[in-house]
Structures are given as structure tokens and as C-alpha cells.
Length: 470
Image (cartoon, rainbow, N blue to C red; front, side):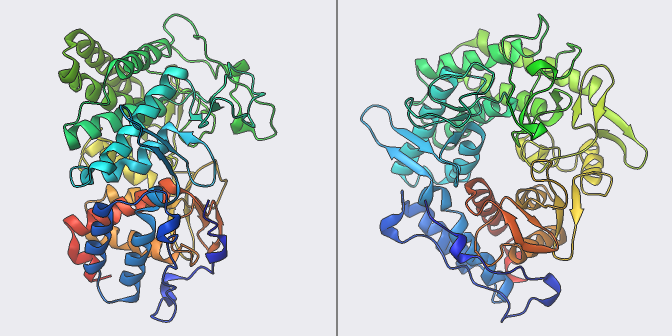
């Protein structure tokens, strides 16, 4: 693992940024130490850097892009290009385990380069194969070890732990991300080789698990408790979560932050499930299973109808908005969390367009002091997470704000904040103090790095003038 802590410096306020103040990122591991190298990705890095303007901020963003965009390939993938079926294990960065959510996000922006690089295509096919095996091992787990023999620190959790699991927190988005990567790969490459009998069994299991967690016939088999002093690390209600009324929504006992949900119908996760189920229905063009496609669409329609019936609330300042969590009884949690799926990320995930009126009202709420997890400081502002406590902004949320924005000024501000808050490392962190970005968590967080790279790549393709005028 690359130790980036030696690269860390101090935070720099936007108001004082000048040519002498911008620490240019120090860089990637040497070529011989990189886990995987893609000529297509290297060309993209060179092309984007060539589009950067001459200002110190633009040059800093270019240098950060050169570090962050290939970070997953440089430092986290373990690729076994075995005959017949490749296998790719993807570390999260500073944790030696593979999350279904993170691994999808980490390789997602590489999909558009797969036609240029057959070996990169096989690497991502290997991620799909590994995710398929993980879902078949346990659809309720969020994170997995590379080998069955590894002993996890969470082996004593009161749940159905088994060899190969790193952590067994039930999060709807884990399974949605598995579908998202498969669908995105198919659309980007036309390659159907990863989608054989095992993959079809895994997809069947995903839909069955969603059905069980609608809890129309009781609480189902999943429960989770952990002996801990950190309350969000364990589920309430004897491990089954707080009560819900079975209205068609899917229970997610944990959020994508890996924190326990307060009300188990996590709204953005259910929206993600609607999108994913329709993507899975589309993929039955590969298998010819029209009955399964119809089942997926019917479940998506049911969840969507329940969202409109139970998850829209009237806010005194913002009008009709989406809640973050509901319970089917009228209870609701009004907030947003930086981790994706989030309310802020809905256009990115394909739930709606950025101009959708209900999304725009919700976005206004999320990016205001009415969201208890939105923080402002001397250097930056943005959405944080209960996972890291008060007064910590997550760069993932700043990036997502730019990815879902319709305005040049907002995107430019996001780029400037990201340039000012890397603490001199040239990489993106998990969370930071918006008054002092040198106070941050997780120096090795590949999801955040790759998502930042995805955002810069999008700006370079769609709004290149912004990179010239930073």
C-alpha cells in the first residue's frame, strides 16, 4: 500500500491562493510499483492535462487529476488474468477488503476506455466476476475478503458471518452497484462473456433478496448486532432495525456510509433500486428471459409508486422535497449524507434529470443549513456525514455537486474548493475540517480519488473552457 501520509502539507484558503501557495501534487507510485497500467488511461491523462489553463489552480487540478484518476489501477487492483474467466479483487485503499459499492465506483469511469484497451476490459470483467461470486456467497454482505481463509476483525458480529466476509451490513446499494457495473460494462463494450449462468443466478438472488426485504411476510432472515460504543455501527430493534410498515419499499438496515439507518426505508437507496432493476430488465436481452425482465420491471414500478406515496414531504422553506429515510407510518428523516446513493446524487444515478422540479427543491434543501449535515467553513462548504461527525465536509459530496450541476459558476467553485482542500497531498480524502483541511480522515480513499477524476474528465469533455479560466 502506498503511504501518502508523508506527502501531506497544510490547507490553503481560497482567498489567499496565489502561484507560490499552490503545492503541485507530488505523485503516483513509480511505474514498476503500479498494480496495473492502461495505455488508454495514460493517454486520457495527457489529453486532459493539455487542456488545463495556465493559472496555479488549473495546474493544481491537472496534477491532482493525474494522481487521482488512475489511483484505483495504480494502488488497489489485484488482477488475475486467468484463462476462461478473469478475476479482479479491488481494495478500497487503506482497508484491505473489497466493498461491492466502492469497487463499482472505483472502476466506473474506466468503462468508456475499454474499447481502446482490451486488457482494461478484462480487468473490469474480472471485477464483475468477483462481485458475482461475492453476491452468491452472501447477498446481505457489504464487504468481502480476498480469500476465504482470512479472518476478519468483525467475525464476532451477531449475524450469519461466514468465511470470506469482511463485514455483513445489509445495504441495498451494494446490490444496486453490482447491477450498475454489469449494465454499464455491457453498454460500453457489447461484451456479454461475464454474464453466464453464475451471473444469472446472482441476479436472481438479488431480486429475491429485494423481495424478502420488502418485509411483506415478516422481518426475513437478516439481522445484525455488534458490541460497540459507536451506536451507528449496530442495528437497533434487536438487530432487525426500527419498525416499518410494509408498503412496497425495500428495507436497508445500513446506509452507504456503513452507518445504521434510523428509519429503515432509505429513500435514495430505493430510488437506486428502481434504476437498477430496470437496467437488469434491459439486460435480459442477453439471456432472452422475458419473464425475469417483466418481474424486474414490476418490482421497480412497485417501489417507485411507494416512493411517491410515502417519501415526499412538505418542507416549510423548500416546499415539496424527498425525505432521506421513512418508515411507512409517516415518520421521516430530513437530511442528506455525502455517501452515494444520496439525494444530491439522484441525476448521477439516473433517477431523474438535474432540472426535475422535485430534485431541484430537494437539492436546495440539501445544500442549505436546513440539512443538519451541511457545513460551511473558511475554506470550503459541503455535505458531510454522521459517519465522521459534525463539521466535516466530504469531497465526494463536493464532486457530486459538480457532477449534478447545471451551472458553470457552481462547477468552478467546486473545482476551486477541491484544489484548496487536499492538504498538499494531491489526492482526495474522505472528510476534512472546512476551516482547516489539514485535519482530514483517510489518506488512501480510492473511491473519492476516482470520482474526482471522473468529474474532471466530464468537465474537460463538456465544459473545457472552465479548465482554462480557473
